[in-house]
Length: 45
Image (cartoon, rainbow, N blue to C red; front, side, top):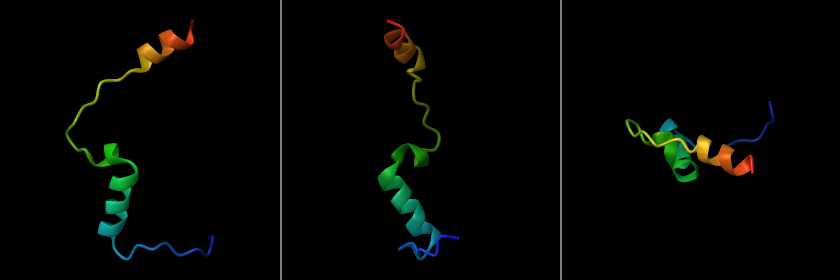
């Protein structure tokens, strides 16, 4: 593919990095309120 190696040796390393970059991806069981309606209302003005 790209020929570029990533600096991760294990799946745990990948998951740890994902948690740093996008913590919402590893918050299992948590439900966050959607704010799509608030955004749509603001954008429609």
